[in-house]
Each structure stands twice: as structure tokens, then as C-alpha cells.
Image 1 (spheres, rainbow, N blue to C red):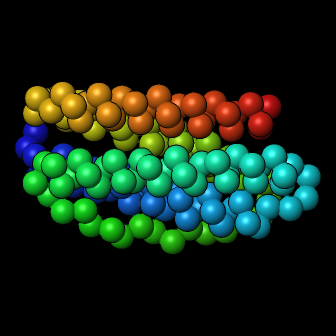
Image 2: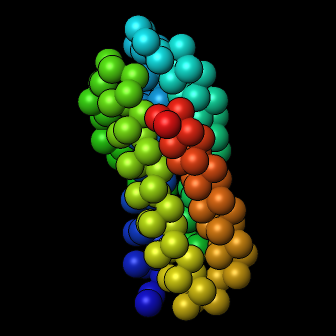
Image 3: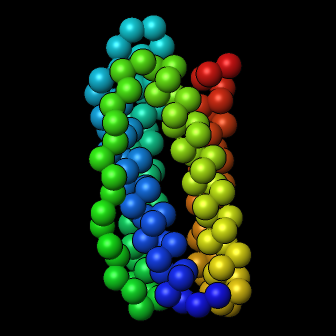
Length: 137
């Protein structure tokens, strides 16, 4: 494991978080119909959390000697609340998987502070996923 690979992974994670900010903001704006109100509330709350995650990752990239490369993918709108929640559930669990990989990489490099912060992100994303699972039933 080298630091460049870790930085590249953190950049990918940061961009996924920025994409999540855009998705949640868009979905909060377009949700209507059955379940739309509940989904809107979840999506609106997540915007700030995901933005905080992206900022943390950008700061860690710089601390490791890298440069944040902001290139998030543009999200595809989903107008159905259940389908949007299902997509977000998948994305939250994917984030958990990615952060677990980053924890291993940080540990291999002796980056204890980063490892702790990534574990906090895992707990956060797990909480998001569990909230969505409850909404989906």
C-alpha cells in the first residue's frame, strides 16, 4: 500500500459524497406522491451530512499531501420515492464497503487519525442505511 493509492481512493470517496449531496438535494426537491414527504425529510437531512463527509475527505487528502480532485458524476433523477430510497440504500451500503477498504489502507500506512475518522464515517453511513431500511419496511 502506498500513499498515492490511498489518496486516489479518498478522492473517489469524496466525489461519491459530492454526488450524494447532489442526489439528495435533487431527490428532496422532486419527491411527490405516496411516501414522498417521508423521503423528502430523509433526503434533506442527508445533504448536510454528506457535504460534511466530503469536506472531511478533502481535508484528509490535503493532510496526506494530495490535492482534492472534484469530479462528481451528475445524478440521474428518480421521481418515485420507493425507487429513490432503494437506490440510496444501495449507495449507503456501497459507501460502507468503500470506507472499510480505506480503513485497511490507512491502517497499513499507520494513519491512525484517518482510520478513526473513516470508522466514524462507516458508523454514519450505516445509520443512514438503517434509517432508509426502516422507511422501506
